[in-house]
Length: 114
Length: 337
Image (cartoon, rainbow over all chains, first blue to last red):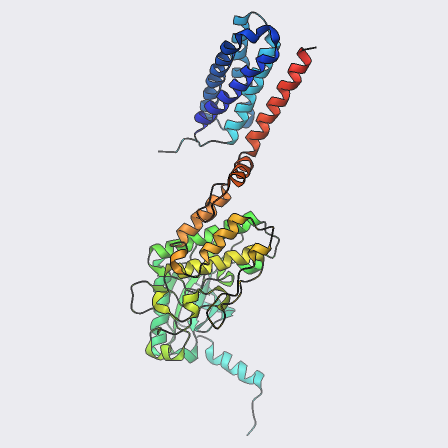
């Protein structure tokens, strides 16, 4: 499995799980579908970006840093549009980025030399 | 007349056997090993100033057939240019007519000696897989080794694996196979049907029964399976008894041996050649799949075993996801107060 594909799958799975946890916040339960879709989409974008980064740069620390930044940034955008819940959205989003960053650095196939 | 002692007789034989390389650019340093057909010496190549190993035909085996066999052995090894097979540098004849060939001198230990040093299972399997690659290369060139055993596999100081002693190797489809275990065959220069070749614990049933017409790549696969057995159980497999039946594999009694490896070993050591892996490449590929945590050809997993293997293979990612979920639970509990 290539690193971008691994990032895409892992980012998507974690995005879905991330979105589903909104159920535990009663005030936003009525927006669950939109949150899950948005969260999954965010995870997919972050995952594929982190995967491409991992394919280009083989460095665990760089991967973690990039994952943190991209995950945190995308989560910030979502929280900004939501006009609130910064901690609840940005903290998990950043951690998803870190996890995908670690996973794509350690696993997944790098591009074959021509 | 004074009788010579055994020691004196041995010394005399040694002196007679000592090869004369005075007119060559090789200088004998010492004897390394003595086998049925030839003796291997450590020597110095004075032109290239490097150490080499020289195999010289024994004085007692100086028939034209044996000389031809020795040359063919050198030719077969020379044909197999592979990092896992010792390269031959030179071949020639001594002034007394004995044939010799010069090969790379390998520093290292035999596989059976190497694994005494508490080598882990995965390390053993990696060494085994590398040996399979060398044998697979020979199989691809229609050469069958016919005497694979731990003593014929060398492990170098950098972990390189070399398959040695191609003395009784056979070219498939060639009517003049190499080496022989019987005097009649030696005289005729061929290996007759009914001649037993190989080492008892590691030879295939067809070899044990002397059915040389059916000795092919799968016979080497059986020997490799026996080596795998040795690496897993630390003992050689039981010798095939007089009736030709195997003494029974005791690997299943060892609970530490994973079932998938037991199955690979059993498939390689199947009684009927058709039930074995087709060649060393297929066996090596299954070992590779085992090492990579993938399903192996020799074993059909149930759902539970499949799940355990998947979790084991993706342990790190699973742990990361679990850590993430734990963090989410903590976050939810913290913010809900």
